Image 1: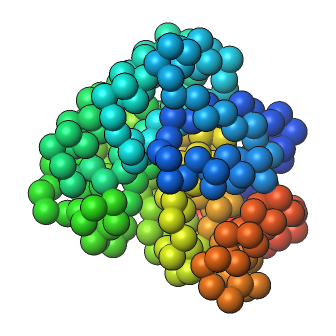
Image 2 (image 1 turned 90 degrees about the vertical axis):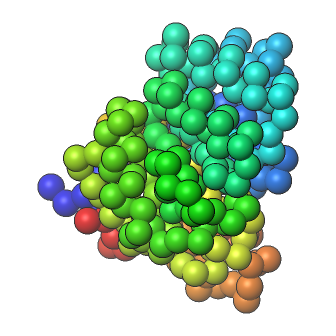
Length: 264
């Protein structure tokens, strides 16, 4: 069966089931990611207080942990949420934003990565840093191509027993043995802040309806990339891209997905 065949079925399932996706994410992207989840058909919740995260996780169908704006209280909330997710068998996604930039950030990412995330979604520099290759990052932006980090991603996935999704011009998703490439997307997407964070949030939504984490991540990234392509065709720049992207996520139809999703 062609890999692109299941993309529509997963998107349809997200729309029909409207899974509750619990996000512990950064200040910069809360609005972006919540709106993207709503547009794709999921139900977002932005809950980070350590006093309630554990209770909220058990109500959710997926958890997304994004370390973009760290503080000790938020890190403790992440720990509690992840522990609750593991106990309740709620699949969770780690977005190691800026891993490699500072010792605190790298240590937090490494600690969380050892707690059995279903998927680690990062750019090439973040994945290289997580795999122990120094000098790979510039703040939260990638300095490397996704192709360069593929072998590191495979090794990291094998070592941690997880799925690693590296996003870039081509997205690569691997569990250490299987590798799926997604060729959807548009260069203008890189000019909008938090696009990677949005990718991680959508992976969470697709994990809620697809138990195979490789397929869930690949299908989510194909949907986002395809929506980006459609949005870029109507946009004059990054400002209008954000508006058109939400509309594209909301209006994606079966014929478009089956014809234009590019997975291999």
